[in-house]
Length: 469
Ligand code: GLY
Ligand code: MN
View 1 (cartoon, rainbow, N blue to C red):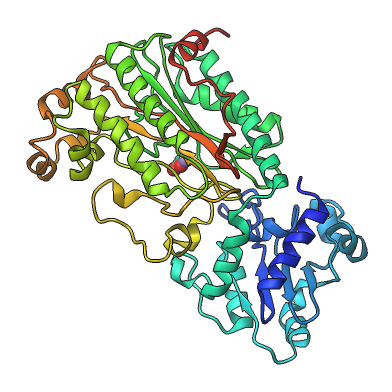
View 2 (cartoon, helix red, strand yellow):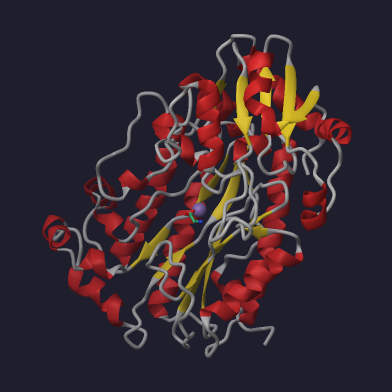
């Protein structure tokens, strides 16, 4: 877990950016159906950036006038102790979190009014609508957590983004821990694979591994022989000998920091000829893009490097025609690589995505309208401390290959007849898709592949399939 001195340093850095008080909300528990049956609690990521293991419904007031941080937590009641166990009293909580004062969150409105002394207070929307509504009442601001433009004052968001963007060594250590658990989960799934299992058998191995290490899935696990469905959360297919399994899963450890890793392997232990070719193309794109990660490099150029590798490889397979640069310029490669090469990673698996492109795109840069490039989630110049994913893929998607407009627009560059063969191969299952995803930290001089110990060489992956039957 990040140490208290680390968290206090982060709070001081935040206070240095402020001119007036800021109230942050942790968010509360949200019900699955009736209130006493909530989803597992997960505090807002910005709150987790400053506080370790915060209590549901807590809030914190940062005041630049005196550099104070006041934490608000629920009053301790015998009823709560009965149902949920005892929690430390306010004095112990104050010591534990290293704050100036701990007050009752049930009286948040009046406490903030007293502490702010007529000064304007600003806040940040959180996913919990009740907490956001309370914040709006206190600050008089209009929030909408679903709209990146309505998360809070833009200067506040830029200040938070600047801090959260550059991961300190203690944060990288948390991501490394999540990566280590993720490695074990991927290895367990690969080594337990055999035709005849269901996808959910392997999901059990993955998420069971997370649980054994006191972690949770950082996002809904994607484990599918239908890898062409990019965020496929169904797990009911039976594995067949010729299937390619795609696993996109990452652990989130108790501190909230995440990993996000994708590996693919043949269900029967050996890729077929097309599987081999596509795997090697995606691996080359993954490695070429990673090579570019260094300070000052524009992330869009990292993406375009992966596009070039994929275009070149698919020309070699006869699926695309022409010069790779012309193909990438036209966007024809995106019919097979329709998403961006990755995103920021941290306390959110798509780190700070709730803040929108005002954080993810550099000033003056806007999203392309072109299919594929329009899904690029990040267009910043890389800086030391940023952690990004690099996750190129190649997919054979019926809805894309059967789309009349694409077929007309890209008829010069795409051999649709050849591409369509991938939709019916593997006993009519179709090829699916292959994605290879690593987590990469930008360092002062280049990069560190945080996920380097999770195998991705094709021959090694093939050797691992089913060894633990
Ligand atoms: N891990 C899923 C994604 O990056 O979208
Ligand atoms: Mn990802």
